[in-house]
Amino acid sequence: MELRQLEYFVAVAEEASFTRAADRVHVAQPGVSAQIRQLERELGEDLFDRSGRAVRLTEVGAAVLPYARAALEAVAGARLAVDELAGLVRGHVAVGMVTACSSVTLFDLLAGFNQRHPAVEITLSEANSDCLIQALRDGGLDLALVGLATAPPPGIETRVIVDESFVAAVHPDDPLAANTSIVLEAIRERDIISLPRGTGLRSCLDAACGATGFQPRIAFEASSPDVLAQLAARGLGVAILPESVARAHSTELHTLAITRPCLRGRIELAWRTDGPTSPAGRALIGHARRTLTA
Image 1 (tube, helix red, strand yellow):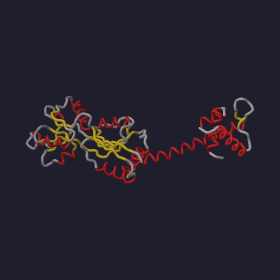
Image 2: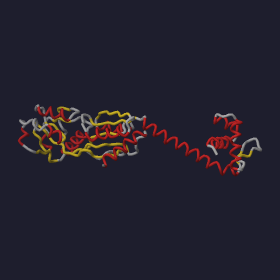
Image 3: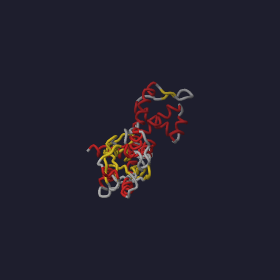
Image 4: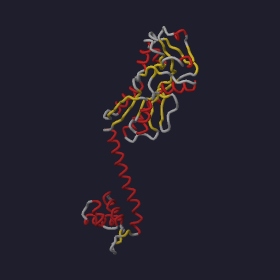
């Protein structure tokens, strides 16, 4: 029994005609008839009643038809699996990261993936967290490193890479530098230096200020936390920074803990819960899960 015989048998059964079946499988009609006859001899039973003008399945033919269809579907599935693996070898993944964020974890993860799948092309782009989340949901990205101050939105799964406090940082001669900590209310009337809207830090700041009863007076915006630190070091305002960034600029800035309310944010690796559609994207997500678990 050969696959082409089953293919011709299904075609004749569905078309109720040897001629139409031959057109469908792009084989001359005598060739289709000969293969069906050979199949019938092998099974020892007629599969079609050819006595009328239309070709009809015999009782045996009707019993065999679902098995023939299942066999052809199984072969199609095997071919799809092979095609997916071939697609992985020649595939492409798109990865996003928050602007000006240097993540050793992400870079190590991509290096490990490249070692396992050297033929997969990796595209890395930068944007604000809100844009990255939307690109994940739209399928434009397979994986993204994002900054979040709240729970991830529906349809997005994450793993926390960094969880730290946001602090205020000022020039050492600033009046606030006499303190080691402040409440958020203390900067109500001050010029604030912050990341732009759409970032996790800015979302956290805006929400906290709103809950405290005022809107932050943003004097300067920049996409890089290091740039914020440099502006604050020149006395241009109060910078709201991740604690690690403020620590890195400790010789230029005075850092103040924000005690009420406490501002906190996370850097998280994110992907869609329904998974990317490409084999390469699925492989990247699997590699990320294994790496972060380890």
